[in-house]
Image (tube, rainbow, N blue to C red; front, side, top):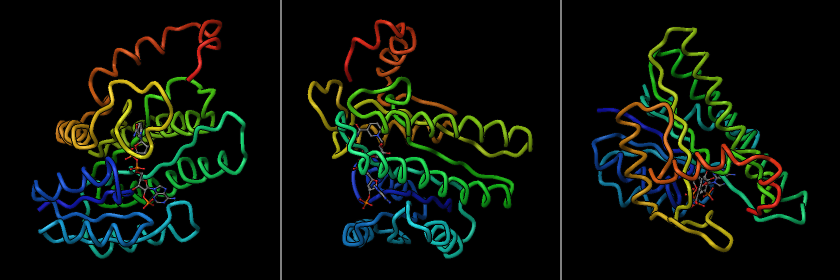
Length: 239
Ligand SMILES: NC(=O)c1ccc[n+]([C@@H]2O[C@H](COP(=O)([O-])OP(=O)(O)OC[C@H]3O[C@@H](n4cnc5c(N)ncnc54)[C@H](OP(=O)(O)O)[C@@H]3O)[C@@H](O)[C@H]2O)c1
């Protein structure tokens, strides 16, 4: 049986992905800070599962993930879903810092442990959940869009690394548009997918070992537009 770990599985996309993986005969490990929700999820999943309660931005997060991997044995797939973000045009530094601590430092800590495990076993699959917001800066959440640009860029760098090492390690960058979770804040949301629909599409991309995907698929159109809007026009828009 294949083994997968979902980091950030207490709610939203990560929770749905964990359930899909379990239904598809994966032995799953999952994490988050809200222990009660992890316990609930472990009861919902009928197959064997492992879970660990920790904050990915805390000092001991790396050793926590190492312990979970050790408990599970050889892990095939690690999905880093944890993330946070705020509507923060007033630039409250505490919110900006928390976003960077979780989405940049926490993400890097998790992906480093995942990569070391996969390089050691000479195979594996890392999935990072970035965002469509990674494509351009955001006036309403500057740290969030910048942190997700970091995630996308970091994953691309890892792909170069594994290519140089000539190892069969897949690196997948997922860029969702709006998904109906706590994270989808603000007004004027459109094309909002359910967490289940988003997770099913992500699962399909994982099976296909894709290096990149917009979720849902129609967000590719928005991505194309975002990439071509000149800076002079873009600054007059507000997201
Ligand atoms: N929803 C959207 O519209 C959207 C769009 C683009 C990208 N995304 C990305 O999708 C990912 C999943 O978000 P979601 O939409 O499913 O929202 P969500 O329901 O709020 O899920 C966020 C997950 O991240 C975990 N998390 C947050 N801070 C953490 C920390 N410090 N340490 C460990 N885990 C932490 C949460 O668990 P605990 O609180 O229990 O720790 C939760 O499981 C995020 O990376 C988000 O940026 C979402």
